[in-house]
Image (cartoon, rainbow, N blue to C red; front, side, top):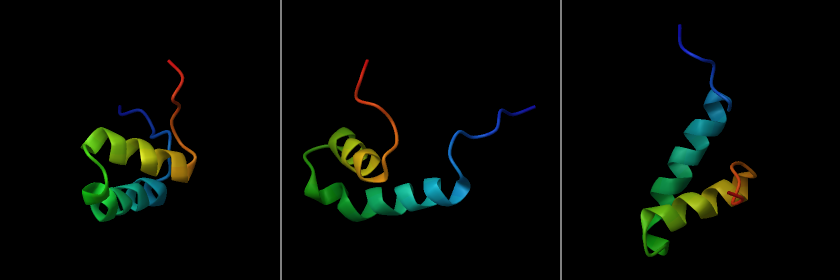
Length: 47
């Protein structure tokens, strides 16, 4: 049985749309992903 997602489906869909929209504004995909995560208040930069 699959584990339930940590984030709601609509939030994940919104994040994917945002990445597609801003990808060209950043030097690489990782930077775009981090920027969108920061805007949505998800993820953590702490390691």
